[in-house]
Length: 304
Length: 291
Image (cartoon, rainbow over all chains, first blue to last red; front, top):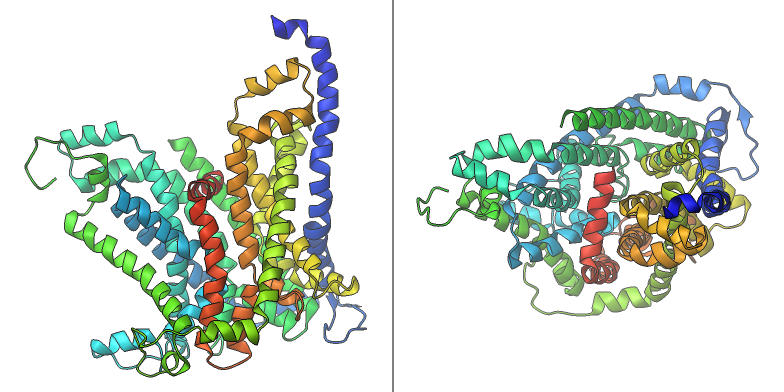
């Protein structure tokens, strides 16, 4: 009744609402337009030019698609793409499996489980640069604690970060240390939302723990896991800080990843045009991957 | 489950927790805690070891003496106080700006009347910006900041961190605003309460927990941000992550000072996050659910 009476004034209100809404959103839009959209467009522009950053007065020289053509024959680019994919797939798979297992083991309302959450928060909030250097210190071939522990089991000294195979493994494991706890925290929140009645009913019916996991727990948290995988996967592609301090892509190109390679092209070799072209190609691929994941999630959610 | 004492039904905790039996559960709990805590123990003790011990082979597991030598060295030689202040100012300023303007924008997009089409476009933009790698804009930003003579200033870092944090805050806050019952605003509207007043008097106090969550996430992100801090600073606007990375690239193996810098970097955010843990975890979970 009250609503009907106020219809004319509601319309007037909605007009002032409209103005206010736009006023609320405009400052942010302008700011993001200048600091995010514009640099991205500038990157697109630069990708068609040749510009050396180390010459302060250099004028960009138009070269058409040559930066993009160069990508096709760039061997390091091919290697970094493979490395990034390998890194992302392996570390995300490990993080999700380990993170979920730990979340399940810690699934309890008791004090010890709640205290454990405080511990799991630490790697999540620690500066990635600090994590990288900490592990670099621990993995050091001569003064590192890891080799010292392994020596008790008769394992000879391993040069973790300076031989190609173990370098990739180290970078992956450090990423798992950094982010499996994050997966644990997210999954723990998801596990809490599973209805206790359903679990107890299954238990009374004599279902084994394995069956309960496969038939109830996993389907219930599947949508959440999809999002976790998506977020982690997209993030893994952007890995920079830890790689930069641990190996800087080395030895050779063994741990060279795309963000680090783009950084090197631009700020080590000062080739702004090529760096920009790489960045744009990277953004395009990421957008396709993200859209693909979102479609997958929508389909999973529709199924439930 | 295995024990046949069926006088008490197994609780939910035990059904999920003992998914692979009790012994395995205990192993997972112990191993995961050791895996996380040991590196932190190593970091802390390394920061307190004397030089002979942090560089010794074989490594010293339990330091024989504890010393503040490394801490004194970073405060003396490395201008720790100034760098700490830089990091704090950059993180605090960019957090304050992005939470205030971000929640205003989020409210307008979630509940305001800006039209369906605009809503969709904004929503998509915020998500894309959250997804794309920071490195994609590094070179143009560097060039622009160089032209504007903003290299090596805190202003440049505040601007860039705000730019990263805004989409995050907007995304989170949109989730919180959408959870509020619409009736609340409708009744306020009928009482003649305009959009701006509605936001500041009714919505703002109600979504305080959400804003705290968004603020901590933004603060921690800016505090730890490395790429732009590294590109845009030389000396005067250096932040803690840049200093940490410097111990590896500039000089040899200075594990002690490196570790003490890492401890100094970790402790403030750790206190902040532990003090507001409930909000922080809620923010993390919310970010994941919204995707």
